[in-house]
Image (tube, rainbow, N blue to C red):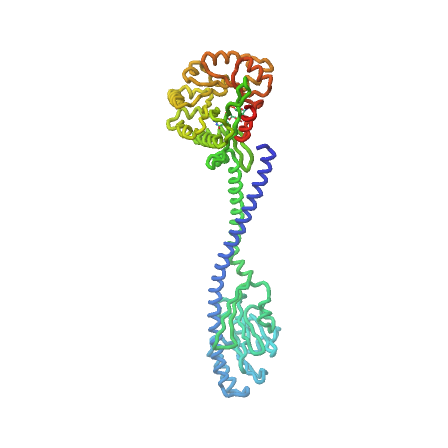
Length: 517
Ligand SMILES: Nc1nc2c(ncn2[C@@H]2O[C@H](COP(=O)(O)O[C@H]3[C@@H](O)[C@H](n4cnc5c(=O)[nH]c(N)nc54)O[C@@H]3COP(=O)(O)O)[C@@H](O)[C@H]2O)c(=O)[nH]1
């Protein structure tokens, strides 16, 4: 992968990681929001229920008071009536003021603890359509300095409800009590909501409040409903800590998912992971490089070379072969390659019987028990291919176990070739012991031929060694006709290289074979 590819993948991975982290943040936010909403709703509902329960006690008190007063026979503000009103006022728990009305006109009233008209100097907060004056949460003079509530009118009498003493704490800003009369609508409690004779719709349309509403209507008092609203500010204040924690958690989630996704994507692109995945999913495939009889020019065999490509592009053998070794998968890899090649070459009718098929083996596998069981290849060899096993000169090949393996395989008909001859660990006595069938002259010797280099001058010596060992020679890396002619002149029997064909598919190999027949 070159630098520009790497940069592109880096950007693409980053974008994907950002996408995934955004998605996860949205998902977690939604989830937490639902949980939070349910939690807040439950909390607010139980709080509202508590308030409503308390306020209902006031209504009950007012109802009892009013029921009693309305049952009295008085028609004017006579003394007896005023005395009853005062007595009733003292008997009730919450009522602070009683007014006597006739034809919607206030004739007289009595206040608890008030020596003179309570709000003389104070402008009322509002008036009802009937002209009732409302003072909201204004401390009563002289008596107890508590806030007054609102007048609830029924029949001829009024009752003032002191809501603060009912709720248990003063100046509550977030509840309402309203009395829904035939022609009017009274509310008490939250001053910001109590402005005039608002309809229910008007009130609901007011902004700045959550839509959480808890309304209880009492059937017995058919005009009486209690309503508690939860306002943004209070709920926000209450849960500010959680909100900060929530934002922090979201930032952490975003950072963490980005990091994990980015690392996952980067790891997926690493050589190690691609090779490991390729091995598991059998993604390696075979190409076949022909080798020819230099004298006749005929393609008489091929070397099986593995290739790999995935969504990130190709990886070349020089990179993946060391990885396969690192992952200790050499034998599994070899079995996979041999199986694929045998199947493909068997299936192709143009590949003749007796064709030489050469496989690369890892020297390390020769030292291991349990490896190199190649009987399955013999079972697959329906076209009697001459099966050549290529091994590089290597110290591991000199071991007792390796020699034992080689002997056993030779006895089963496998041929052996020493690959890259001349550049590795060369040892004449080892060569004799191995009793191989071919020496493959490393391509560096062939490449240098035109320059008459020292290295190329060694080729005749290699020819002598081969004659001494009675093995055939295959020259690797033959790229042009001059090299080919020179090699022929040196009595080298076989050649492999781009002059005869690059590594190619089984079908292309079949055509090459046919072309030289
Ligand atoms: N154990 C296994 N080793 C394998 C397998 N497949 C490949 N390999 C080894 O990887 C090394 C690199 O192989 P590759 O990139 O496939 O290169 C081969 C040829 O493409 C290249 N070649 C062949 N002719 C020419 C040429 O004329 N010019 C030129 N510049 N290059 C040429 O040489 C490589 C073949 O080398 P060798 O195996 O030494 O004959 C290589 O060591 C492979 O062995 C596998 O399945 N198993």
